[in-house]
Length: 184
Length: 302
Picture 1 (cartoon, one colour):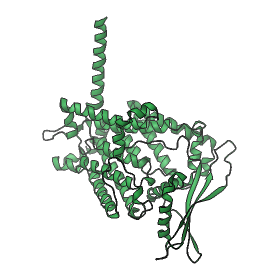
Picture 2: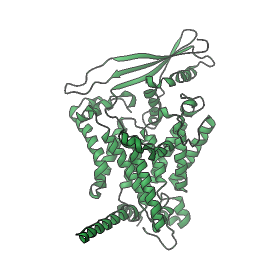
Picture 3: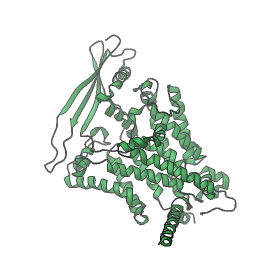
Picture 4: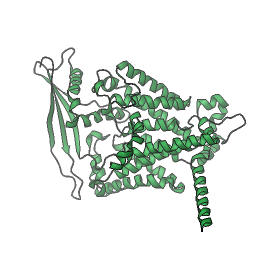
């Protein structure tokens, strides 16, 4: 059944359009929301900077727009962040990102991999010490923390596909941060 | 001459009024809105449940990213500064997701969901992806739609159990906002793919070889196939552009909704993109023909 029967009242959203004032409210809402949806996506330009104040409240409130996926090109590296924890007795443990399986667990895995993708960058150095400290707690043997945690980024450049196939590339490794424990 | 101009102006104005009326005010059966609400509620539940399993590592007081690195927006609804506060937010989101799915006062719960999602996401901005932003935006935009008008506890309570399988006609203006959001996502996803790998038809090979975002590892049989990769690369661009523009053409809509869903299912099969794919497919439902759904569901109920 569509339409209303004798006992049915229309919903509040639909009731709005049955009055002139309501229609005016809807018009304002639609215009404002449309600007909030389209505006933040406009390419960077002096003109955009001048009018950004119109949608900045929406962005600040959490209504964000950024849909640049695999662009302008996909990332041409496959990467991994690992940590090597050294204990006072000289033994070491390698810490890797947790994996939770390819189906439902993939939604969890992806969040950790996002951390990995961003924390490796020099521009995110502010996260390194706290991340290493967290890893130290994660690999602790009971109350014994490692004396040192070395953060390593490993990556392999991805050559583009050509008619002759894909060229092999070597695995690179770089130590980008060392965390020293209280006794280190 | 002046009379002719005035007549033309009047005709244009009346055509514009009619188009605006049809687009924003002409009421349609509430089925698409109700189905979107149910699926969105399930996605919020999945998002929150998977997040709950990593509160200690990603959101708590002693998480990988400490509280001082939480992003601070101008309108910071409330900062989640302790593990207890995070659990309260997660618990409220789980309750909200169930209420939205079942259709119990969904508008209120959708607004609360938006606020809580922003709070949780701002606690750890390092782990976010496009799907997380889309989740927030859909929560807010769905609040502008009569999502509880059909297939809901609200309808059952007001009109009895028999009314559960019927849908009233509702205003479509909120639906237009989610359609706009969807088209904007597709357009700027297309627009931003300006690199040479997209132009020369090899980008998908690179995407599927980024081991840290693949679901089952890199599919070698696919990444080395020049012709298939070119088809997939340019096909992606073509579908994204078509979903921006041709989706508004009624006749092409069913095919494009199908193509869009296939695109997202294919991406989700190989690549981790969080909840972006499921949300975009829910968004595509906003273009479903409400009258067609009405006829199908009436036939099923008969």
